[in-house]
Image 1 (cartoon, rainbow, N blue to C red):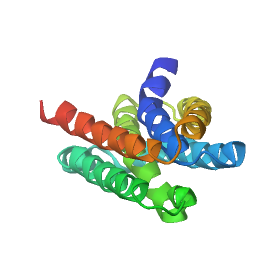
Image 2: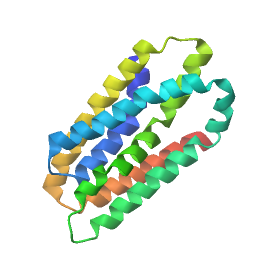
Image 3: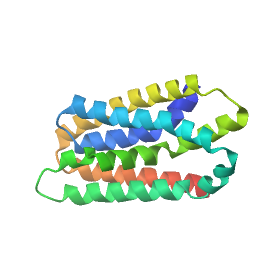
Length: 178
């Protein structure tokens, strides 16, 4: 179960690190906020998947990679654009809409895990707790590490964070197409 949780949390870790790079101030508060969103969504999505049942799996699996790719590419492009602006807009990465979008995009795989749990008739209580805690921990660590890097390299690292998000989106897309 720990391997499943770690696998699900990897995208959230990478996205947290990229956002930490773009948000070098208020490291602990922002890390807690982002980790809480990511951990909560990673806990919620298996429940949604479980409830959706097998009929929904075919519909979602056909477009989940396109949704994640589109959302991550949009947010990444926005970060790259903001890196070229003179004003400091780092806090915009932690707006509610952005947090919800990133949380959803990084937790679509957890929805599919929930569907597989329903198919295998696996209990949800322990797995969702483990998935949530692992995701929270890795997201907090990733954001904190990224924030430290952001302090060292300044506003231009925001473009690197945006590129990382786009690469994650492309990776998700390619994994599902291949």
